[in-house]
Amino acid sequence: MKVLVAVKRVIDYNVKVRVKPDNTGVDLTNVKMAMNPFCEIAVEEAVRLKEKGIATEVVVVSIGPQAAQEQIRTALALGADRGILIQTDEEIQSLAAAKLLKAVVDKEQPKLVILGKQAIDSDNNQTGQMLAALCGYPQGTFASEVVVEGEKVNVTREVDGGLVTVALNLPAVVTTDLRLNEPRYASLPNIMKAKKKPLETTTPADLGVDVAPRLTTLKVEAPAQRKAGIKVASVAELVDKLKNEAKVI
Amino acid sequence: MSILVIADHDNQSLKPSTLNTIGAAKQIGGDITVLVAGQGCAGVAEAAAKAEGVSKVLVADDAAYANQLAENLSLLVAEIGKDYTHILTPAGTTGKDFLPRVAALLDVAQISDIIKVESADTFQRPIYAGNALATVKSSDSIKVITVRPTAFDPVAAEGGSAAVEALSLAKDAGTSQFVKAEMAKSDRPELTSASIVISGGRGMQNGENFKMLEKIADKLGAAVGASRAAVDAGFVPNDMQVGQTGKIVAPQLYIAVGISGAIQHLAGMSGSKVIVAINKDEEAPIFQVADYGLVADLFQAVPELEQELDKVL
Figure 1 (cartoon, rainbow over the protein chains, first blue to last red):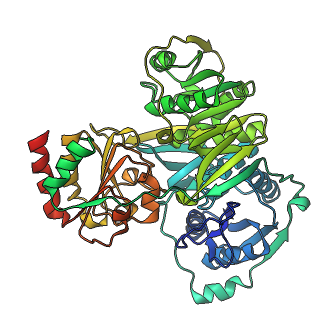
Figure 2: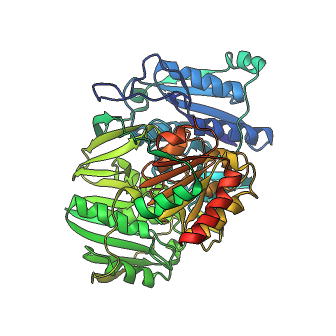
Figure 3: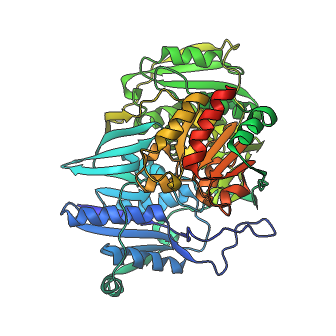
């Protein structure tokens, strides 16, 4: 079966985020960009399905500027077979992203679509679910285990208070949580090989999708900083402060 | 304005986060209806009807909604929700699962995890793991919103007397089945609703040592959490994780033990009223946000804390 994986180019998770002084957004000039960590887990899961002989082809898709090719190449180096870049410099919100991915699903007809549960920039946690709804597919969100059995996939989900397992008819959408797997590192020979793998470029207009934003960002601010309090010298002093000063115990 | 709040519940009881979400709905202003979708959930509907500020409770009691499967729930909410101006639910794992589907079915955006209501169409939400706060305005006719419960005061659980109306709307997409649930059993309060939380980090060294924290938790009626470092090291399960990639908590008292204070952890707990840090490294960033810091070896300080608490409690 064919597996489609969506990946997003985001600020590297090790980079300290700085809000622009004019409050229009976050400063991304000369900042290191990388594949969203949850998307890496999605690529890894797809590649493992291929190694197990369950997936026959892994197609990776990204939406973003021309530079998002880098993240597609990374996915190809990790073991994906070919890439599709939906190239745009516009802001693409979750609903628009889901519609663009739906257009790719219509064309590629994958049995399984794997996405990260959220991107670490906008923190929306929406695209996978929206894609599933637009396609009429079932979904297994926040997955910590994915088992394909015939025409079904069993997904164990990380939920508040524990784990829930659901059985989904294929085709289906899965979104990854942190503990689904530990992504591998790309080897140098695989990075070289990835450069020769096919990468097709298309645009929202080619796909006939209206990507006009529905939400307008009025301002972006840095959160109020907490001030450091006092150091206590002993446990006894700590308990005394909590009881008599803060009155929280 | 007419607001539909989707209750978070387990068919037995209404989750407290629903009351916080009704609190957010009151700030938007307008008529508030609560939808309880489940199976054998009459008790939940009664509880919702008593909540302050609710004018009507709709109950969809059907096997299709027994396990809150997103495929079925979203069909129901999209059908009922199109007559409202706002659809709200708590940003727990249930809401995060089904609500984006509702937004897509209604062809509107979702505004995730709001922490402030500026007006009926403008809201504040954290982005970049809480390192920035965005104020966003929606141009859609229906605002579909998940609410971060800890950012809003709950309405009173008692005192209301809303009418309860049964719906006979069974929406079964027929594409997914519930297989099993493995819920952590604990007599302690849930992390996200506990008024005191004590968390351990990599400094705990192993899972066995978390028992020291559990003893303190039982004395204080607290929940036990962990940093992502402790989860990644395999000390404790992921559902104990406090942080951007885990649970967001805002208790009255947060005690961080052996936690350095990585940005991703701070994003999950810096809304706490009082923060205590116990760490042997006095340079640890956690001390920059702690109201009370104790530079000490946790293996001495935690047992001592247990003894001191015995004296005062």
